[in-house]
Image (cartoon, rainbow, N blue to C red; front, side, top):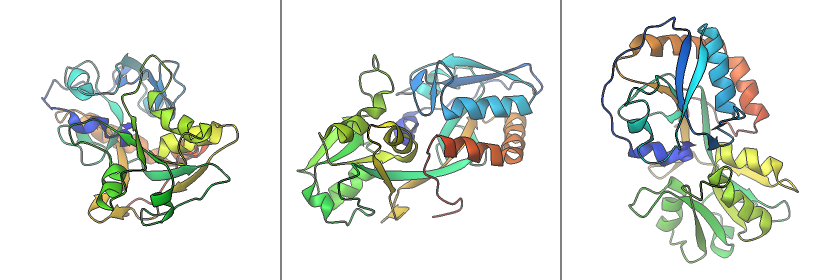
Length: 269
């Protein structure tokens, strides 16, 4: 989200159609997380905030935010409740919303200290010897792909879980796994790319980020296309967003690069 999985928190949401908003409105109503850098926060310091501002300007609109923690029920209680018309940072393939064409594609990444081993694959033997941290969604089986990839290889005893729904009273809860690498509590963190790139670059000293080499681990995807989401009835708005995203592709790439988002080519498996 933007966990996603990344970001992955949006995979739990239930859809119901709501009324369409006319194009050309002075406001672009956006729902977003107020405490989730590098994606968004209430001070508009995230890359999603910057991209939304860019797209709203192209649509001759002003973004107006409704804030809600991007946890379970996020889409149901925001977009589906007609509290906004647009949500950024949704993975392609999510059900219950109409998605624009992707505006970037990223992957999970291995985060390590500069003096450590830097794996590129889940088959790297260092993962069996090191203390490995993974982000977990919950105890109901909806865990991110890296956790599944490690478990499939029998790598469990040396794995530590870091909950995506960490203490929300602290800034940017998903970043705790990066703090654990920097502080030496774990040797390797396997983290959704945008979170990995942003916080690793800002650690002291900076951490090493190595994107997962294979975008598919068996049938499990490690890379995801990311898009804007609207209600299914808002086809005209989706088309307008598509046109604005295409026109501003270079500027969007510059924003993502500035936030150290690991990017992989569009159209990959």
